[in-house]
Image 1: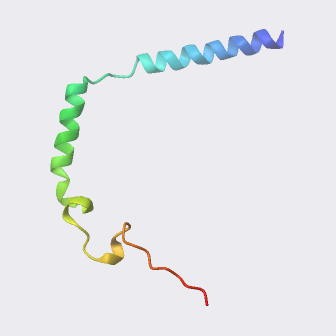
Image 2: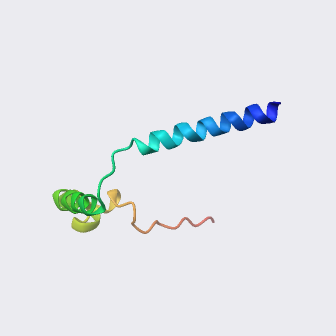
Image 3: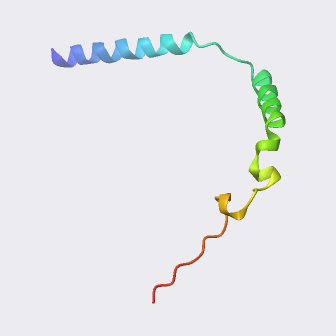
Length: 70
């Protein structure tokens, strides 16, 4: 009996999840790509990988200094 109740609960959870996913507003890929391109162009001056870093200390990609143990 517990197996059937568990299976029923799983099926209800799955149905609820599918209903939530079906109600999500979909966006055409062409529109999403255009939105991404616009976002990148609008924020390119803030992108440190494009314009560089103000100093080496704020650069998370800098080469780390090695630590030698004597």
